[in-house]
Image 1 (cartoon, rainbow, N blue to C red):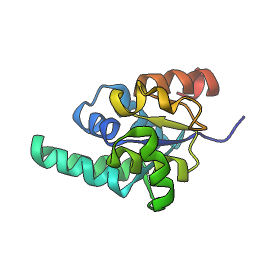
Image 2 (image 1 turned 180 degrees about the horizontal axis):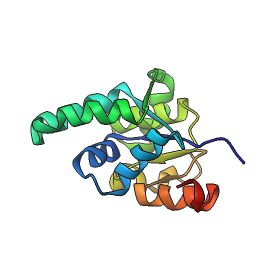
Image 3 (image 1 turned 45 degrees about the horizontal axis):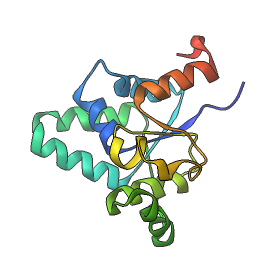
Length: 152
């Protein structure tokens, strides 16, 4: 059986996991908690989610910290400026270029996002990344197909 997949969560997916206890993004955190997947984020992602929670749902900050701990999320080192620059040509957005660069640097198996504009519907990403990019639901379907229903 292959090793557990390594996946990267962007801020939109991580925020969704905190916001909704029943969605696909939260299920991904539960897979991390069970040790079925390896979850990676960058410090930039954590900062973005924390800022969004402070603005939209400050009462959820405690749950955010608890979910990070329980799901065994790893914070990877910041990518180099060179990799970010290469990604900027693809995303057209400095912040999202940093996120994509972190995922590339982390050598992940899957990138999970809800950002349609810069990632999911971005034709420039086709063939750029060595990993699939999809929604939490897309990832869960990919995971089930690849690792079998019994592991979920």
